[in-house]
Length: 209
Image (cartoon, rainbow, N blue to C red; front, side, top):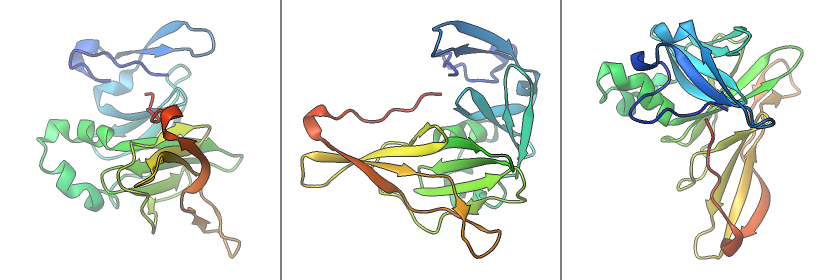
């Protein structure tokens, strides 16, 4: 997983000179990599060791930091109207960093394409696109307000939500989109309840970058 630097240094900050640190969760080892793309890209999120990057011209790319392999995804142009009030109030240099703070990403892989889901936490929608798409598709539904930002695990998004006036929390899972059975279109189903946890034993899901 990608490690935060602290002291106001974010991935792509000039003070890091293009370097970024990763922790191998299996071996417990630290690895530092230099990524030239950080000269004109900013990290939106880190997914299973891959970096989701946005270029200044709005291009979105999924990067393997050690092999340099890049997957191209559609620009965020059709999603920005959903986020405009949150982004355009920020000074231009901080807009992508602000975007990184309101997005949780997941990635899944098949023989056909890579699929990325973006949980847009401030508006409670989920968007998805594949490496074959021309634009992002926004969910017709919203996930529950009041939940912490979703956490990515094995290509799916997970979130925990407190049940009002009760002593339990519910754990929901959002699976990658599937074909609708009527053609080539993909459908993103609403969150699915996978567990109910008593409050004393519950800990909020917290994201890793």
